[in-house]
Length: 427
Ligand SMILES: Nc1nc2c(c(=O)[nH]1)N[C@H]1C(S)=C(S)[C@@H](COP(=O)(O)O)O[C@H]1N2
Ligand SMILES: [Mo]
Image 1 (spheres, helix red, strand yellow):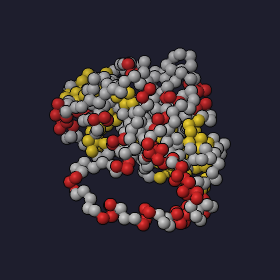
Image 2 (cartoon, protein in one colour):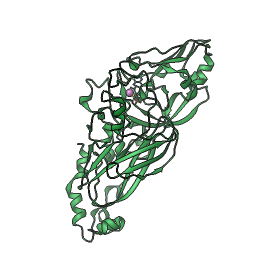
Image 3 (cartoon, helix red, strand yellow):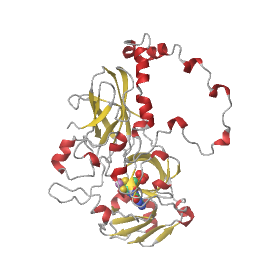
Image 4 (tube, helix red, strand yellow):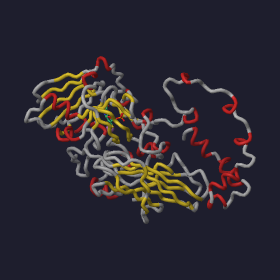
């Protein structure tokens, strides 16, 4: 448990609300009135604070801004026992501490196979070779002279929720679902670069390659590249972070994160897939009969309730509460999210708020009057293809229990009467 979680869970605050005069039942019916009553004698109102009376830092004190010191707990976290070494590892986006649909750049989860490459853009090149009329090498300046587009996409690692295949394991949506981020990319459509090189008639596949020490490669069908892939250089308006592939990465919208090659240095054009390591021994779905599926590219429709969740318990007594979460699909947009408070027996539609883009995260809310009794929270998303997020049992019926990747099953959180939340499975 983190320091801040403990602070928030401290019984004194709950006790204060309980014992406060004239609060009791009023809290459930009219939370705002109850808060006003609680303010009587509140030192936060009566006492002058430093920030009321002293001048603050001037404009140049923070040339690159950072969050308030009181938000120091909002950070990526890893699970040390998952991997042998942090240079080939993963950390997780703190989904339970965010809102809206955009992931701030400093909080995007990281997945590296050989650590973060610190690339000097002046010495970085993008080469296109293989089945093309003209093999080309682009500098960063060359790339800036192609038309750019801005698009919001999620990137989800195929291994997201992989630890949960056989049952509930990690206690927090940061850890069960945090291998995802959702940012606005600025980039050059890959098709413009391929047109510049000129594709031979037998060109069918691409092999993007990273400049990191892992030299990561994946086979990407040409059709996908011509459809919506971007060579991205900005995220949320600023340069990609080194963690995310500075100065350029490939965006492969809706498809598994492993294909989004970071520190992109070369794209080979070929006539068949290469079957490299990342698409054979890794990132394939091992079925019950011991055979693996050849490729699973799309990230299917999925959702998770981010609050309440194990790292974000309910901190008030019974009464009005805000449930929220994220939903996404690699096949399009999200048209509906249902929420259940009783482990999937009854479903009610949630309210989707904020922009809805294809292959981007969607934010949903469900506000309800909590009667203080235990809950089994679930969310179930439906995408624009009409595909419904499955239960974990439905997934296992088809795929068996050997799988790691592509677990888009429905997640359950058990809210206890005290407001604490635990990861459980109800399928
Ligand atoms: N060059 C390179 N590209 C890479 C990787 C890598 O290790 N090296 N990891 C891949 C994997 S498995 C994932 S899930 C995503 C993670 O992207 P992120 O670090 O921006 O979250 O990058 C992919 N691209
Ligand atoms: Mo990944």
